[in-house]
Length: 77
Length: 147
Image (tube, rainbow over all chains, first blue to last red; front, side, top):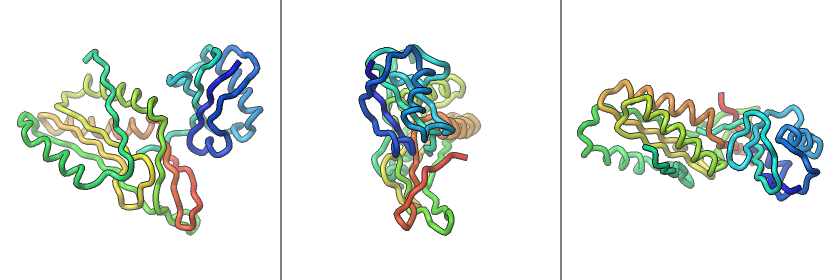
């Protein structure tokens, strides 16, 4: 399956926004595990996901062509 | 208020004092207002390990930030008797001493204006997907963390 990955803040320094071919998986928790294998710098970092522009609080179903944003802690203002 | 009107809060570059002055002046015809509250965030020249912050470069997940700001706006209007509220946040490179956040609330009386303004500022910092990269005088940087 394919996802569109968008990264922000310090995460964007080691993970570019990109279309990414990933093994088939069913939810965002599995995706987190997969991303942490691909990008070991994520391990131990605080970050949140947004799925198709909605903040992910608990694991959400993942579908082909979904857009996933990966976001470090916010620091606006 | 069921119609969803997403307002853009983002301004490229610093928020100028004249923009703020014009915003204040624009309220003089709204004579049911008795109290305004204003918060302005300014870029501070923090010192970290002997290096000075010269600017903050702001980026945002704009679509999500504007959706979230819309939710905050609706909740604030539901809870406080406000006449109006205005929020502007900078994107891009903002130098020390320049204004990067402007929150402006108005009500018939001071208390809701002040309380709403405070709550909006706290929620912007905690809930909007915006990131600040602190640029130091030796061209290195670190990512800002909100306290």
